Image (cartoon, rainbow, N blue to C red; front, side, top):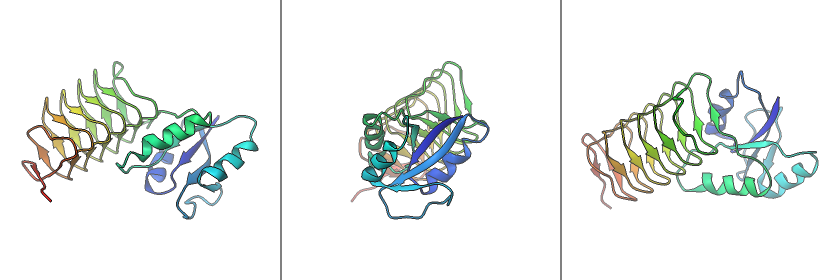
Length: 210
């Protein structure tokens, strides 16, 4: 068994721990900057960087790590860099009931969760989440930090920019582009390109204006 810690101790951590079942990973600790209670009392919950550094001093070698943060503010990539700087390799995790095509490419720290599918020639960057029952079809390209929400569908040849988010149950039609930081609302059907930073909702998806 290989040890792993999670940065994040809320909902994404609960989903991600289930993905460790029947693998060679053993969860040994949680880290979170928030003052929250560990969802698993048997595991230490370390409050921030200083507590993590003190805990690491007591170990012969650093564990691997995973970033259990689902939000789209760039913090997942920031934490990945923080962990790597401390010598903690960031693991790529694939649930035993997910599908990943043999010729798909998964970036470091990606998480492919239960019943998700990553299809032929898809390319995922660092820290990408393909959440429960979501699908990324052939030739899609997802930049670093993208999060595809539960049940969302990217059809073929979709390109998604850094830190973009596709909400639960949304559908993005073929050969479209979502810009960096774009947000697609839950259940939306995207029929045209979405600019960087835009928020789109509805069927067909339309941009929300401030």
